[in-house]
Length: 245
Image (cartoon, rainbow, N blue to C red; front, side, top):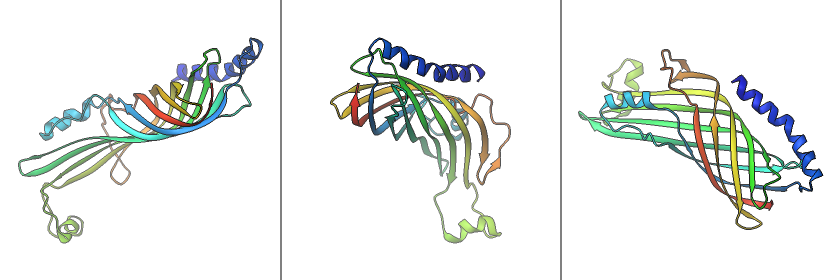
């Protein structure tokens, strides 16, 4: 973590120097503002979850990534050439379900994140914008576990908590991992026209101060050490705005 913070600090300190060098060799500061839809794939390690899903008797969660959808945007602040500030937010899920021994079983894995983006567009690359930066924000991942017979009535639902008839084999739990993040990013914006651009990029979500809770904010212990919300991600999207690359 110290190495990551050191790299980000050097990046922030170097931005004004890059801008000054750009002025000396004739680079022109970029300007504009844009926003759009951001389809994203995140790739957290969910092996420990799938170990338990396999014991449930249903299909494993996809290990090829979790699809998320959201939005992002930015504006060049003009105080420092080629520096832009913006925001991003997204959420997605990965699920599996089936019937085992007359019981309906389902597992859902959810992932979401939101934050401020800081990016510096490299001035020596023309026609497209190649930007390095970071997301400063917070997010969460959660696991929802369900099992039931499918036979529900108003009385037997409340009977589980008021001393009445209890529905056996009924499970409904939600485990949540909340965290803060500093996520280094690299993005490429390719203009289709002066008002439309295609974005592709990615980064790595590093979790800071993460905590695990279950149901009504109760602490859950003995969470496997390799189960975390750290994840590479791939971002794509169509941006609309004003581009001057």
